[in-house]
Length: 71
Image 1 (cartoon, rainbow, N blue to C red):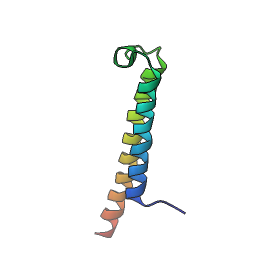
Image 2: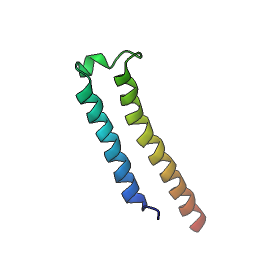
Image 3: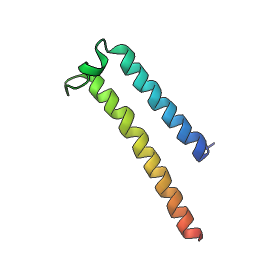
């Protein structure tokens, strides 16, 4: 069973937001401590931004290809 595109979009954004809040709650000095590339917080914030952007771009590209073929 596949999820619809709007459901998948909302689900990915909510999971990313949960990861962002998790990294904010786990790091004791959240804004200043996430600037070093040696910090785990830096990579958790980076992934919470990159993954939804990649997935949404890929999904909307596929939707654009589908719409282009049917027009």
